[in-house]
Structure formats: structure tokens, C-alpha cells
Length: 114
Image (cartoon, rainbow, N blue to C red; front, top):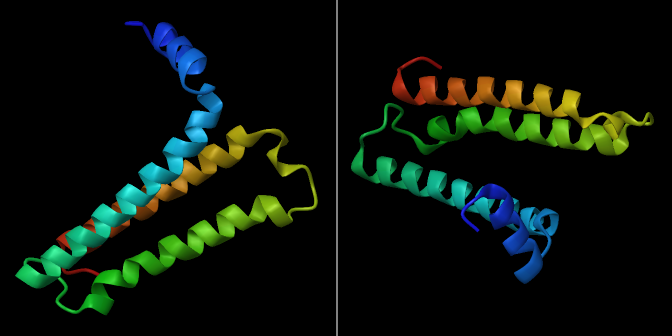
């Protein structure tokens, strides 16, 4: 059980298969991260330690993130070709763009630039 393979086999034999467990873990982690982000925004808004004083100005960078997720996640669903036959390209493009947007969010919150 002390090796990664042993842990994976222990989980698969005693709890549930590992791929089904990921379908449970990923949404819980996403909800926790969003909840913690909202809590941090609220606490910085109340204490006045943020760079942008209005709540709408703090939330403005999230608009690009939400639009990006809606477009990126809806494209494979509505694409007429078999786009997800090789999901590596989609995953790499999503990760690259997501990291770019997150860096812009951090820079926006730490400086006075828009």
C-alpha cells in the first residue's frame, strides 16, 4: 500500500475504481477552489487590502475566464468532427490558455494595471 501502484490497487479493490473516483474528486476540488477564491475576495474586500476597491473591478478579470471556459468546453460538444479522438491537443491548449489567464488575474490583482 506504500507505493503508488499499491495505493491505486487498494482504492480500486476496497472503495471504487480509480477512474470513477476521479469523477468525484475533480468537481469537489473545483468547488473547493472556487469557494476559497470567493472567500479570499470577500475578506480582502472587507479589510480593504486589495488594489481595486470596487467589487465589480475585482471581478472584471473573471469575465474572460468564464467566457474562455464556456467556449472551450462547448467546442468539443458542438464540433461536427471527432475532435476528442486525440484529447492531448485539447488538454495542452486548454492548460496553456488557462495558465495565461491565471497569470493575468494575479498580475491584475497585485498591481494597478487593468
